[in-house]
Amino acid sequence: MTYEELLTETALADEQIIVMTAENRALVRNLPGILGNRFIDTGITEQTMIGAAAGLALRDRTPVVHALASFLTMRAFEFVRTDVGIASLPVKMSGFIPGFLSDANGPTHQAIEDISIMRGIPNMTVFAPADEDDLVKMLPEIWDSVDPAYTRINTRQTDYVHAPFELGKAEVICIGTDVTILTYGLLFEQALIATDLLKKEGLSVGLVNMRSLKPVDEEAILQAAESKLLVTVEDHFLTGGLYSIIAEVLLEHQKTANVLPFALKDRWFRPALLPDVLQYEGFTGKQIAEHILGYQTKYIQPEILKPNFAE
Amino acid sequence: MTNKEYNEQELGATALKVREHIVRMSTGGGCFTGASLSAVDMIVYLYTYFLNVNAANLYDNDRDYFFLSKGHDVPALYGTLAELGLIEKDRLAKHLSLDDHIYWHPNTRIPGIEFHSGSLGHLPSVALGVAMDIKISGAKNKVVCILGDGELNEGTCWEALLVANAYALDNLFFVVDRNHFQANMRTEDLIPLEPLAQKFEAFGAAVKRINGHDYAALNEAFSTYPFEPGKVNVVIADTIRGRGLPSIEERADRWFCNFSSEEIDQLLLELHGNAGTVLTSETLVVR
Image 1 (cartoon, chains in turn yellow, brown):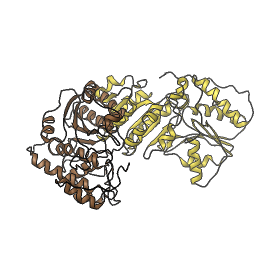
Image 2 (cartoon, helix red, strand yellow):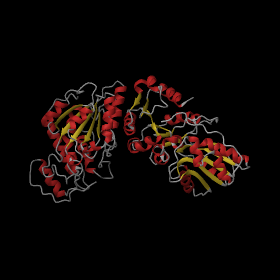
Image 3 (cartoon, helix red, strand yellow):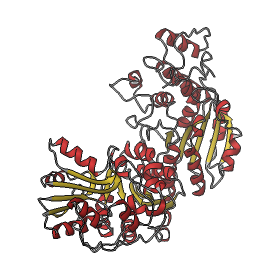
Image 4 (cartoon, helix red, strand yellow):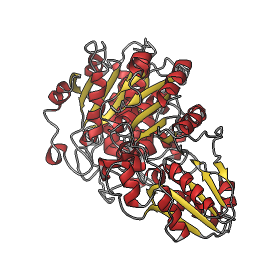
């Protein structure tokens, strides 16, 4: 099932759903004809779309709003915080091309602080699915909740079949004592590759797909902290994302861990097509594994698919 | 439209009481007195004769919606809600107190306040969303949003108008409290807005420009609606900042006022026509 199919099915089953977009129609192409006046395109007006979504939610609607992640979370930030956050309205934000998925667009389009700023809003919930299978497993519960939500939309296809989703729970792929990798979003693909490689090299490796960054699965983090090395892999600034979340959780529980973060430390990433971005920035599965191992291997990095749409 | 018979004396009497409330809130921490006084007459008029909102239907789906976007004129709304029986009058004595939630900007803990505001340029889009839902639902409720003229500096006001025009929201009313001042100076001396009516018209709205203190003009403007089918309704209400208190009217330095109790006594008399108020409190306390 695709994102659009799920949204169509959900909106047809629930009259209260309103689908909105600030003229980003890539994933909602067929919805105008299907939903009629329950599809609202406000044009290139992220702030107004969010304010209007708050207004619709005041009338008991559940707006599912679409825009590029950077503009949805940053151009409209104060509207999200002030109109949706303060009132705690069930506005469901779908951010396109978050993180590395903005590939060659350049830093204007790089939503790599989105998790940091969205999770800083009281009442807001934050999610980052690993691929489209994960996305469609997560969204029904996200949309069904009464809380405002921000989801990093990720429609990449992988072979991995994810477990059922439980809000606030991570998906523990495997457990290990030497290394545990915590990740979310499209880098799950690479973390999975890294996990396999590390296992081939004889390490006991754990892998966790965080899925829900707020509320976060503290137990999964505390368990991961038991391994000798805890690795975070995220297409986000080092500040405010998963690395920070882990620091907060460990501190709160008066624990410490040996943590190796893969993140963007105080810098934007080099714009290019996604496979080249990952290679250039050192986020391929092979690079992640070799960085952890401290040596090169003969392992061959599997092909990284290019995204199938541009904005 | 409410079924109430139009009575100008009654409107004037209610507005005077609301002005008294505003003056009484202008001490012990103070409030945005001038901006509140400019908005009183339109708010009292709208609640009395235009909006289908009362203590009995406050949470009904078919009530009309009133949004105070500029927000810092909320003492005028507190006073109106108290005079019309939507909140208890004694709550106003708790202005700025931790015992209540009567503070410098609107919040939904006050019955009758549909949404919080304070950050300018937000409620045009929130009102837009409510008006959209009313259209989608095939309902007839009216949605009124009061804007400050200084607030029109915010681009999101104009963004919301663009979208409201695209969706032909003739159930949506923007009322501009055109008191010709923004925080520190006259609008035309900082970011000129005129010709304002033409600007709104160019955005596709049906515009009326009236004296916002003239009840007959307000009644005439809101007597039939939509002003034009398929068009967003805009009323530019020319007003005077500080209206009712000549000692602070149109004074750039009397935006936020925090008077002494002696000054409050004099200002209450001034509302009733007694000149001779001597203001000695600090001016232009910027919030």
